[in-house]
Amino acid sequence: VAPRDLVGVRAVVTAGGTREPLDPVRFLGNRSSGRQGRAVAAALAARGADVTLVAAHVEVPLDLPGVTVERVSTALELERAVRALAPTADVVVMSAAVADYRVAEVSSAKIKKSADSPGLTLELVENPDILAGLVRDRALRRESGDAESGSTRPSVVVGFAAETGDAAGDTADGGGATVLDHGRAKARRKGADLLAVNAVGERAGFGDVPNAVTVLDAAGDVVGEVAGSKDDVAHGLVDLVAARLGVGGR
Ligand code: C5P
Image 1 (cartoon, rainbow, N blue to C red):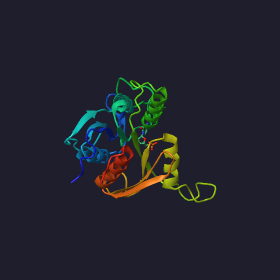
Image 2: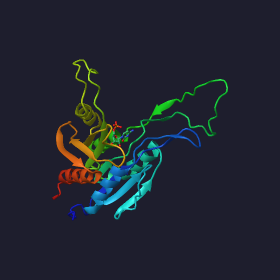
Image 3: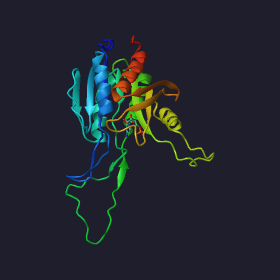
Image 4: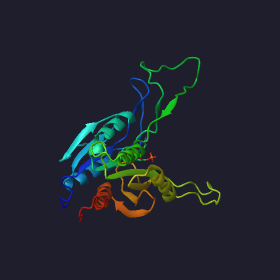
């Protein structure tokens, strides 16, 4: 039985994959199932946290006790939802797979095949990095020192990074950067308090498969390793979050 050590803690968890519309019937999407985010939300709620799950497109049911679900579709919708919730949250866990790009202009009519050109070129524009934005906005609020708008929250911002190593020979020394090298660089770039790095390959990562993560802090230093099912990873991660919040843990 999980300890109820997170009673009074407000948590926001994102899950699933965003969809970026091209026209009324098509979108650019990704393979995120939402399982890891769901597991994190469930683990936080089991320990008594008050959880809002901001769910993009998921393959799993989200009816979890103690969890309020807010549905979104695109990266910009997800950003709006998270930014509204973050300043009053203690913890934000960004498990969603957010599209890095959206189409510059969504077509209001279904895009037709053209008789005279064989291909189709889509112009994409970058989506905001929501995680990096949360960390940046928090830093601004902390600097402003205004107790009302100047919330120091969220105390703990957590990201996930699915990485692959480079093929040997991709770097000058011929070794290729490892999953952890990429994770370290990302941790420093994004500034999340905790970044859960997992190696995606043929076996681990997406869908209903076991997972293994190395957790880094904002400096890129390893603060934990968790392996097992997505539930095990979620509980391990929540232990690290609880430690950061200064509550007992198990
Ligand atoms: O850079 P990468 O997509 O690997 O980073 C993954 C982490 O950043 C995840 O926590 C994801 O939710 C978050 N992210 C984000 N906004 C984006 C892209 C990723 O918040 N546009």
